[in-house]
Length: 483
Ligand code: HEC
Image 1: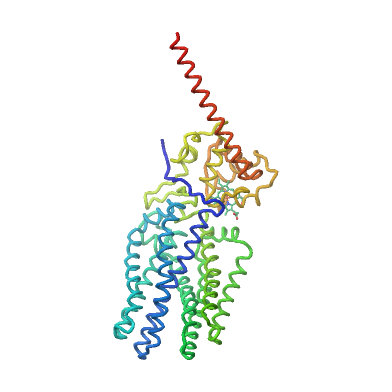
Image 2: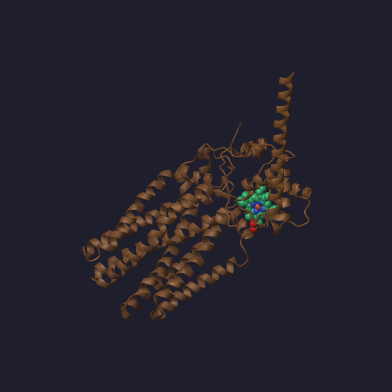
């Protein structure tokens, strides 16, 4: 029997597994980007401190460094493994695709990451204990190592959207997968916004500076850094949109709410206004205000950016060959990877999935709803989260007087053929089309409650039948003994 590489589906009630990953990833990006930007800022400030023989700059580095150590490094180190855990269960084949292509790149990133972590301790605790020149050298190593982690991880992240070069599909090879237009534009964009984050978070440290003249100097430095990087970042975002596959743009237009664009513009304008304010009036920078603004700006800016990137990839989760629902949807001769679609077309999803419960491997009169729900969980739940009132957001699209016949026509005509840009091709046997459609209609009309009740009935009926069968066999055996 042929099985494909599917794993049990992680089903996170109401929220959906994708959002859990997005939540953890947003915090991770926040922490990691702020640290990398700060590392480069420290290299610059340390250099200046050495050239101009200034203690106050070193003191600033020490304070900002300590703040990073306590907040971003701890948050980064917790959310980093958090991303591994959550993506491994949410998207085992997606993360597997990345590991198969980039395991050594990742190992290299960790080497630099170790240097980065050791570096931040040295930067903070060696201020005043080594001469300024040595401190500058350490800062430069710290900055370069931090930037290296970023460079590597962006190559991997952009592979999720699309392999660097089209040739990768035929030839494989990690350089083909790694380097492409998308990688470099994304790198430039992230570097720009990372300085924005460094400037915003740095405001919290500036708020603590006692000497008004120095406070003003640092507020100006960070203000300029923030303004320039935000403008460059916004320009890079426009370029980035040109470097993603057309398909991704189509999905984005379909998928993102209409308030998306105005709210991004509002966040950008607000960020610029904030920097201008802090430059003109450094005295407004008190810790509570700076901290509050940091949270607002960073979360409001990052969350939409990361979710947009996630949505745009649909229907793929990695490399334009692993679908969001974990099915491998395309041949990749360069990596010896075969599409799983032909097998699914032949056997159906229930037989091909290794974790289908025994009772559900073929659809029959006694398990239609349960099999339909299983198919929906496997094929659809990654993008459409089940909730009490039904799978989201389908109640918006499926009319409430839908008939099963109409539903079947849609499932067979659109979903099994992949005749739609933003959803995967999801092959099903006719019996599976029927089961899924029955489930979808019930789910649309009666929500989770109706479905659960129907499934309970199906299970009870099956148990009754099994008991009856057992009893019959026993009677037959006894009768035989008596004869
Ligand atoms: C890769 C993610 C993904 C998967 C997997 C997926 N869908 Fe969708 N689906 C979408 C997106 C994106 C839309 C567009 C509407 C939206 O959510 O904003 C959509 C829309 C729909 C619609 C609305 C009508 C339409 O054609 O736009 C229906 C019905 C639907 N999906 C059913 C399903 C069913 C049933 C499954 C599982 C068999 C499924 N989808 C699997 C992403 C997905």
